[in-house]
Image 1 (tube, one colour):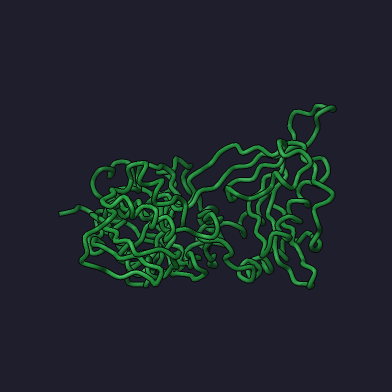
Image 2: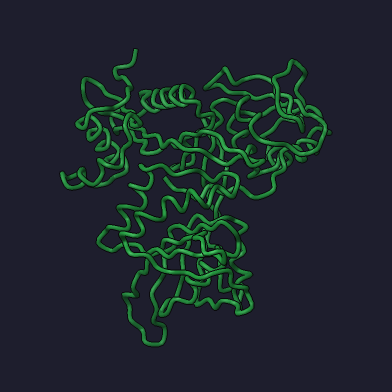
Length: 405
């Protein structure tokens, strides 16, 4: 029997204790009273789970309640797993496993059929059924010049700090989830990711794009980092782009134009951008935009396999019987008949077999079934089924989450 128990945290003292465990696990300094005063508002009620042993916090996990865009234009309820940490002297004692079981049970009870996370270490979460569901790239633009023939679709204005907090949260909601894998952002997310950032000692700046119809349809959050080593012939600050979204490509183009044309900027660094975002094509010299890295972005776990599979759409191909293995949530194990009309459970012999983590990599379209089969992630029992599966699972865009947490 475990010498600890996992529960929902409701009291300030135990929430602070669990958050302190997280800070130590991430090798951050101990939390002061002022740190806690800033951190406390970022927790939504009953969404923080803690593992306690003899009244002492030894593990933590937090859930962002959200919705995510799935292939075909629909959305599904999802849980965003974050703030996961285990005290060093309780590692290898099942704390993480019990936290995972607890949060999956909570997700099922709340109808959240998908779970997302951003992995600090990539080797941890596969055993719990998470697979790389979206990828992103890190961009570095060096002395870029924007092409003059790129059409303008509106104008850009900067916001004050007070305007930021009032305007960009509803604007993000109005822009909508325009790519597979994009997720909604609750008040607790904005409290962590924007409110504290904009109000900080060196606040980020925000600019909003207004379209030709007079409606705001995009924004960018960024920060200028001064050049500490002044060289007269190579002077210029670096822009760090935190968030850039727009309801259409024209709005996103204009926001990139705004960034590129800011004076006294030598480089622009943008993290977690879509892998197919055409930034290079907007510049006079495409080589002034370099991809520094391709990263795993959102790790995806199907908590309810049948509900998740049946919620997305499929291409025009004959059905394929897919066996899913889920050791951590055995209720998901079984064979599913995937067709252009939807998904049902079946007793037919499987033509393809994969584990639930691989299904997480397949679900949004990060990789086609043929690539996963070639990498040994899918067992093929009927070779003709691979091409049909490629057609069935094909999506109209490369998935991207775009929301860190």
